[in-house]
Image (cartoon, rainbow, N blue to C red; front, side, top):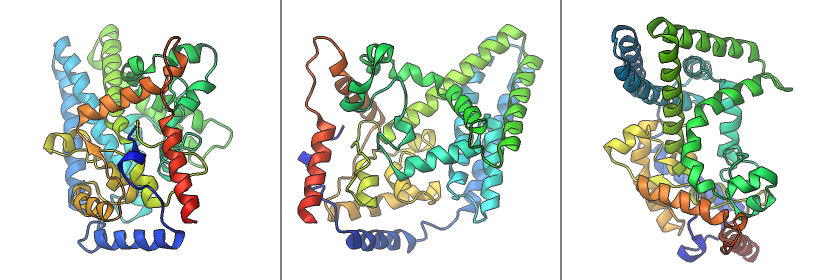
Length: 370
């Protein structure tokens, strides 16, 4: 958790000022064409990513060496991650101008990955509306994890005992993320408020399962197929978890009474991972998470170009723009999770409630300026 009260003035601007401020930021990124569609870029990404998928399937079929197949399972996890980035951008209408075209890309991606597009859109859009809001952000509502002391204190029974040591199992539990995507998708599609497309989406998920295991059993014996699937799914979950964890974990926590305007909400709750060629490639450009949260429809290859504009915009207004390298981001996340769970460990002295102190200071500033 970044100590925002010590680093800067986090007082929000007035509602009319906030609108004018964001309009100015939009103008700054629109004038150089950073919000324009990038069809050639996405065609290249789709073709190159599908080529990697074909390569992995070819290796699976033609290579008769189990250790090569284990390596191939890890490679396929990386390919699934890259495919997911394309689906993510299509879900934000960032690939094509047509809503239907973006939806079709999304359905194709979700069939390959075996998940529901409707479920993803529902929870991801809610996350963008309320980042790091412990009541409204689905990314914080994980039963075995507590992202604030308040939530840790609310835990009961076995969850309370387990969460006391959440910093130690946070990374290993990410290996289950792939399964969680599928289970959550199925629950959403078969729940009480079914989306109109629930039958086609269930059909796409069933097609994924049939093709996935059919291909594995065609190429490998049953035990090898099982090991391949376990390695692949665990690696995919770990890859996605490690990519998305730095975005918000350990940053400012908000609640339903958040007094901040849109720009400050998105920037203060978000962490960038400092870019280089390898980071940009592995993180799919979503290491520019502040830029993405401010302009979710911006094509991924333009986020890096928006970074200096948004950094300067924030600097001029005293808004903290935070970025760091991957290793430090993970250290901050684990340290934060260990600190907030101290209230659950016998003999541990609970640290000061940084989240409440920071949010209280922000609200006091809002009241003072109101």
